[in-house]
Image (cartoon, rainbow, N blue to C red; front, side):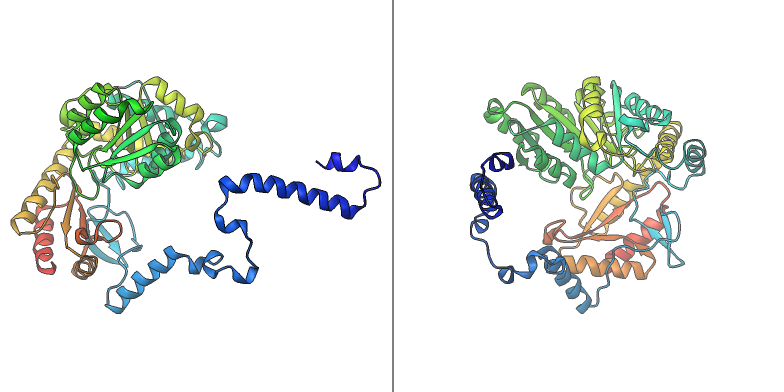
Length: 447
C-alpha cells in the first residue's frame, strides 16, 4: 500500500496520510462484520468506557469472589483454602506446627514422602539437573522420560505413552489438537474441567450425557453418528467429586458399534482400582486396546506432577510431533519423571498398599453410611463425599472438624450445585480404622 502511494508524484504528506487512513478503514470494515462486536462499530469516548472493562478489581468474576468471601467472613467462617503445610502431606500432616488427620491429599498409596521415591528424584537431579531446559522435541529428551513412558505403556498393554508437564494440559492439548469443528465429543456431565477446555479449544460439537449413562450415549449416536466425522466419548475412571465409576465394558461396546473413539481419564483410578492398582481396566478385566485413549496423572498415586496419554503408536507419535501442549512446552523435570517411575515400580512390587487403601476406603464408606451420612453414589474407592446440603453448612463443618484436628476441604458452589455442597474425603492406605472411626463420629456431630 505504501509503495502505491509513493509512486504518485506531487502528493503532500497530509494527502498520503489520508489515503493510508482510508485504505486502513476499508480493511477494518471488511473485518468488522464478522469478527468485532456491535459496540466496536461506533467508538465511544475514553470517558464512556466502564471501569470493569479495564480494571481487574472490577472484573465480574473477582467481584463474585469478593461477595462470597465477605459473606463468609460476616458469618464467622474463615477461608479453608491455601493452608500452609509444614512437611509432607499424607494421611497425616502438620499445619502451623499442629498435627492433623488429613483427608485433603491425593497421596493415596503414601508414595509422596517415601524414602525410595525421594531418593530416585535426588539421584535424577544429581545426574540431569533440575530442568531439561527446553522442549523435548528440540533438545530436552532424557532416558528417564522414555523409561517412564515405556513403563506406563506396559501397564496398559498398549504400544506407547507420552508424558506432559501437566495433567490438565494433557487433556486440553490432546482433545484440542485431535478433534475439530466437524467432530462430536460426548462426555459425562460430571467430567473434569480439563476435558471441557479441550473440547472448547477443538471447536467440536459438545454434548454432555447423564452421569454414567451409557444407554444415553447409544441413543445419541444411533441418531447423530452420521452427522459427524470423528466422535469421541470421554469418561473418568473414578469421578473425583462423587467417588463412583462407569460401567466401562458397556461404553466399550457402544463405541465399537458406532465406530467412535473412547477416552478414559484415570486421574483418580490408577493405583486405586484393580487388585494391583492397575486401574479401571484391571477392575473390569479389559484389554488395553479396548480403549483408544488412556489418560492419567502422575500427581496422585504416582507422587509426581504431570499427565500422560497411552495408546497406539499412531496416537502417541501424532501427539509428540504436533500437539501444542507437548511440542511448545518444556519437558518434564527429570526428578519428577524419576519419582513417578519409582512410585509406579513400587506400586507393582507392593500391591498390598492398594489392598489396604481399598479396605480403608470401604471401611470409611460403611461407617459413614451406618451413621446416616449422605455419601451419594461413592463406591468407597479412596473418594468419599459427605453431602452437607449447602455451601455454608459445608464450610462450617470443615472449620469445626479442623478445630478438632481433622483437615478436610469443603466443595462449594459453583464447583457443585448448591444443594450438593459437600466435604470431600480422600482416603490413604495409611489411615487407620481408629482415625476413620473418630472422623465419622465427629462428622456426624458437625453435620
